[in-house]
Every structure is written in structure tokens, then in C-alpha cells.
Image (spheres, rainbow, N blue to C red):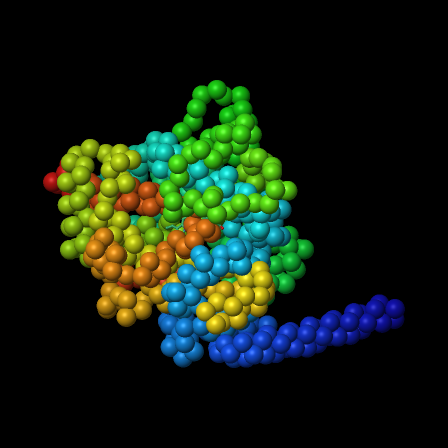
Length: 525
Ligand code: HEM
């Protein structure tokens, strides 16, 4: 009897809770809509809870780019959407410059990523840090991505390149079909393991490798959960209560164990390692001894002059928690993005023999029959153009900022707390900027063509002081590995190939793989 009473009280409590939540959500949505209306910002009508996420989930065959382009056509260059955070989409390049550069002090942060804060190990990651704490970590990390330092990482990349060559030899000998995405995942993971975790991993030749398995699990979990927790941010906290997080404990414990072992080795070992982890350790030592900041860093990722922290923030170097979070972030931010761009570039070249020929001519001319050096990888101009064209067509990540104080930008009022989404995908496919925008044409990225365009027409790595810190590393990796793929082998489409590829609109991953074969090249053998 008592049990029955408790049960009905619980049910009533639950119903009251759900109804209250529903009312609060509907009221909140109306409040936000009123704010948009008052500010004269048009936009599609949102639904309670899911905001405007439905067209993204349920694309009916459309790409994410199409959804944004249609909104932009209908509502203009500035419009409001609910993602489900109220967000102002900026589809105007000058306005984007205002947000990302000119009024940077009002837009230095990003809104919280649901799913990140539930994971203790990710607490201090650069992507989500805010204010002076972000400035401090960014300033400390920037020099580790200087050209000088990347040169030091190159031997680790060359080792991965050797493993790739031996796998390609086998694939060409057996005439096997291979999913280029799967292969590039292994390449990209081996690279991140080497440069960010100080680990020698060869997933390229051993897909059962434990580092690969755990690193891949985190990314897969992230892709599956991201859409869900972005739509229902409260779900991230609820799932965390039952032990489900974006960064599963099993996997993060394994990776943190690898990192801790490598760091412990470095403390005992006097030998200098040439990987990224060593650079992090050096950055900390240099900062501790007051030497930080003398390194010449590429101006595209170095904004230390503009990122002065308050005088209260005088701690030097990185804490253990900052090293852990950012090593894991480099895996999270640098694995899937590099995989996507590398595999789509390779696959597209397999389907475009005229571009492939030009890329191979460049490799023959610059390398002859030797392996690429750091300088070679930096000078692969045509491959760089192909890479940029792939990113233009398949941008793997959003450019987001949080407005930290009420501000007017070119007559548009942006309230504090609102998210700003820079519609890079719209700039990248605007027919007024790119003729025949959906066609793959690397010639758009010659120096002359680039000089004719607005600098914000292409923002593969974001813009301004909070752009992608890993840009130089990503470009180096992709140029180097595409050169290795094409130097002695020719990728060709096979029976299983679906060309052009069909990508999942939410995750950007190819739905049916990127199947190709490798044929040996005779000329450069
Ligand atoms: C082709 C590969 C890549 C692409 C297309 C890419 C793109 C981006 C974009 C668009 C952003 C947001 C920029 C903004 O908001 O203005 C970003 C941020 C970031 N990326 Fe990348 N990225 C790539 C590879 C990498 C790699 C290899 C790493 C690290 C090893 C990395 C680390 C980061 C980090 C840490 C941030 C946050 C920076 C901050 O908030 O200060 N990315 N990336």
C-alpha cells in the first residue's frame, strides 16, 4: 500500500517536473524570440527544446551547407537561429571581421560546449577556456606551433610516412580495395600519437592497436553524442550521472596513462626527443625560467601582443591539468579534421585524373625519387591548393563565439550571452565569390586568385586571435602525407567507389566510405 502511494507520488512529481520544464522552455524560447524581434533580427521560427535543429537532423537529402545557404537567401546576411542556444548567424564577411578581429574583446570566448564540462580531464582545454585563463594557455602554447618547432616534430612524421609507404606497397601488390577514410584515420592517429603523446603507434599496419582503439572510441562517441547534447544540453549532465560522457573513462584513462608514462620518461631521460610533447615540456621549463615568449611564431597563429592578461594572472607555464587536457584536445581537434581533409583530398584526386596528374608532376619535379623533407612538404604548392579546395567544399568545423557584453556591430545589436556563428560554409559556396562553387577546382587557390578575394571569403581555420592554433601542423601533415600517397602510387576509383561522395550532414563523414585502389607508378619507382 505504502509502495503504491510512493509510486503514484513519484509519477505525479515526474509529470509536474516535465510540465514545468516544458512551460519554462516555451517561455524562454518566446523571450529569446522577442529579443531577436526587438533587435530587428529575422530568422526561422524555432520549436521549444529543439530550436531550429530539426532541419539539421532531418535534412531530407540536403547538405548542412544547403540549410545555411537557404536561410541566408531567405533572411539575409544576419539572422537568428536557435541551436538551441540563441545564435546570431553572420553571413557577411565585413561583419565577420568585426566579430572575429575588430571587436575581439567582446567576442573572445566560446559558449560552453555541452558534454565537455562533464569530463574532469578536459577541464582546462583551450577550445572551451575563457577570458584570462584562455589567454594564458594560448600564449604559452602558441610558440610550440612555430615553424622552427614544427621542424623538430618532422622526424616523427617521417617515421609515420615510412609506415604508410610499406602499407601502400602491400595494398598495390594485392590490388585490394581500401577505404581512404579508414586508412587516413590510421595515418592521422599515428601522427597525433607521435606528436602529442610521445607514443610510437603504427595503426597503419595494425588496426588493432590499443592507442588507435581508445583514441578512435573517443571520437566516435563524440560524433554520436555531440548532436544529441548540442540539442539537449541538459542531457549531458543527466547522462554523466549514469556514467556516460563524451570522453569515456576507459579511453581517457588509457590515453592519460600513455601521456603520464611519456612525461615520467622525459623527467628521467636527458635525451632530447623531437616530438610535440617535448615541446610542451620545454615550453613549461622555459616559462618557469622566464624565457617564454622569445620564439618567432608565424603571425597567423601568434597573437601574444594582443592577448595581454590582467596583472593578477602572472602564473608561468602549464599545469599538469592543462597539459593533460590539451594533449587530449589535440587528439580531439586534430584527428578527425585532418582525417576528413586528407581522405577527401586523396579521394577527389582519384576521381579527377587531370588534377592528380598535376599533383604527381609537382612531386616528381620537387622530389625526384627521394622522400620528402620538411622543406619539400612546405613547398608543395599544388597539393596545398588541392587541400584548400577540399576544405572549402567540406569545412569540418564551425566558427563560433560568445558575446561577453552587449555590443552593436555595424548597426546589429548583439546581446550579452548570445552565440555568434560565422557562416563560413556560406562564404565558401557563394556563387558571387566562386564561380560554379560546387565544382572542385584547385586553380581558385593560386596566389593571384587569392589576392583578388576578401580575406574572409575562405576561413578554413577560422580567423583572428582565436583561430585554429594547429593550422600549421595540420597543413604540414596533410601536404606531407598526400605527397607520400602519390609519390610512388596512383589512387584510382574502384567498383565500390561512390563518386562524388555522399556525406552525412551532421558529422560530415562519408556515408559509404571512400573506396579506392592504389596502382604502382612506374615513372618514379
Ligand atoms: C585540417 C585540419 C583542421 C581544420 C580544418 C581545423 C579548423 C579549426 C577551426 C575552424 C577552428 C575554430 C577557429 C575559430 O573559432 O576561429 C579550430 C580551432 C582549434 N583547432 Fe583546429 N583545425 C584543424 C586541425 C587542427 C589540429 C591538427 C590541431 C592540433 C593539433 C587543432 C587544434 C585546434 C585548437 C586547439 C583550436 C581551438 C583554438 C582556441 O580556441 O584558441 N586543429 N580549428
